[in-house]
Image (cartoon, rainbow, N blue to C red; front, side):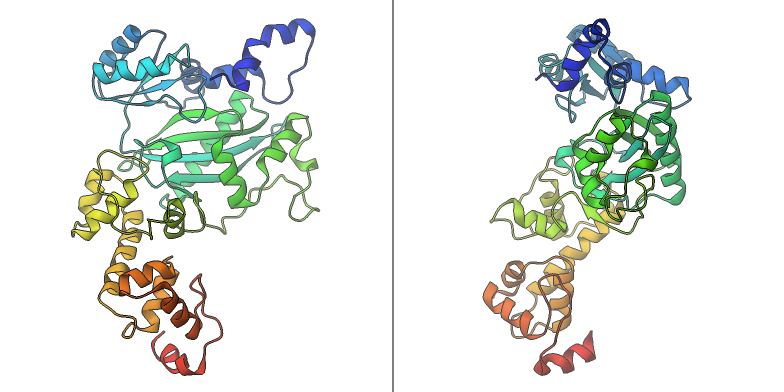
Length: 404
């Protein structure tokens, strides 16, 4: 697969010979960020740490690098979008298998020391031609390193970072984008040690819009693509109008007054949107927790059902216990509902279930009833589909007042 970045890099000399001016981020910066070895050296120049790594242009060189770094390792293809052709290798056989795929699309791979189990954090940062910098959004993957970004649930802003963690990574992001000379928008990804939280390693920088940029724009209301285009044309941040107020400038960092998941509305509704057969966070798919895939969320539901604790699941997945506890709340509500019937369930339980994202269909399944009956009951007691309490019918008001 050839990307626009590949084409631009190939035409670099022709641009210079023809006197064509490249707007926005210089091509040299793109080359530095896409070439893993050059990126590691650039970060070392400003005292920022990357994971131990080595580049390779042949499978034999990759194997030699794996032996020196020591397995397990991560294999990444250079000049690839969204982590394409990357993966974990436990031994030389797996490393060669990954290389055969990576070299089909890239002339170079990076062999990197595995940080499986570390927290995966991202920052969206913009910089203009006058060196004004802001961080627009920070995000964290629910899954630790070990599952592709596209398959993982991403939450913005991060929910499990301390104020120290947040500001440490923010400061690093600004220092990095200034050193690299990015003009426009970039995405910076970190690996954060879950035990020694002050230990953070830079994984890579996308000196361009990425798939994470769309999430950041929707979460914050800050139009990153529009701003990046203006910055590329040389317009400074303070001269771009705020798209919301139309009066103030775009040189501001959005307030942290939102929580967004990389799938529609909530985990529950997102699971329901995958396929009609999935009613919600319920026991549907039983896959090994230690082998992360896009269906790992179902495996977690399965082990909660069989009685595993948050601590035990954390030992197998390294997913932050904050998230696991929230998922356990959903499981416990499913169990509470399953012990009730449509005639005995209280208004309080219905309200709590809706606030946890349970659909009428899932509530009905747990109660052994029908979706229509649950919807009618919910509407009678004045609870809307989002879990908000609206006008309450007089027949239900007494219980609502007494028990909610």
